[in-house]
Image 1 (cartoon, protein in one colour):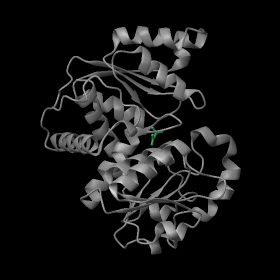
Image 2 (cartoon, helix red, strand yellow; image 1 turned 90 degrees about the vertical axis):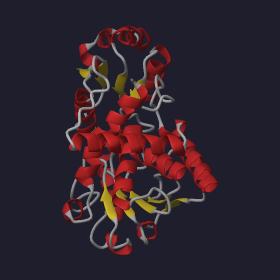
Image 3 (cartoon, protein in one colour; image 1 turned 135 degrees about the vertical axis):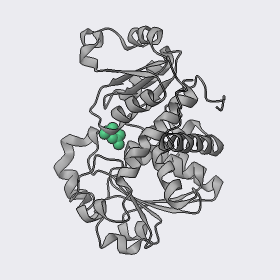
Image 4 (cartoon, protein in one colour; image 1 turned 120 degrees about the vertical axis):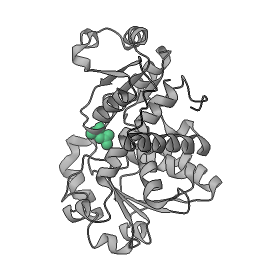
Length: 314
Ligand code: CP
């Protein structure tokens, strides 16, 4: 196993190089093959991980717990309302206490204050802290997306990725991933919706350095034109539930449907991090169609989280 990740936090893909991400994808795929071949891979036998979720999750929580089990480790799920955090114990002290029990902590912090929570845990825990989706980034999703693209297309450069949907954490992670790995990414959003400027700056700089493009457009057809990978995302991320109706209206022209994908390459791959809402950001025919990698991508969450645990927490 590669040593250079051991003991580090996994907070954002911005912290890693192209070589690092390639290694993470290779280990994810190796672990996926070991599972398929029923080869034992209990590399983390005897370890125990904490999973603190301040927001709902289907994929991240379950894939993490199953990933830990496959590696011979245990994962204990915690809700903040069941901890003394709910009665005012500080985040700092909670982090220092949990650090005495766990070999690593997987945390999905609440929207709004979440990035601060994540950074505090990373500061006060000596064991690795893994970002299970903050407002800013969702690196576990980003890594699974890259593994899925690599499996479907056989490479991670010289590809065009088209994005439609909320320019939020999942978009940010994919922008970072595409820019580091050398893929063009064209993102279509309505007026008034743009990614975080820090992410945009990072992604544009890295794309330019690696010879790829990071393009924002208000025109879905421009994003879709010749795309190898078509990524839809929800129109309202968890942080934006209160704006659901306005966002559904604003993003409606950006739906991925049979007409929109006519612009993409015939063998395009459709991706969506989930949870998906067929009929809103993409039609049922697209989610369920022959180009869809929706469930493969969800499965890859488990294989990539196994790699993160094995590399960072061994
Ligand atoms: N994509 C994703 O993180 O899904 P969950 O919210 O179900 O974990």
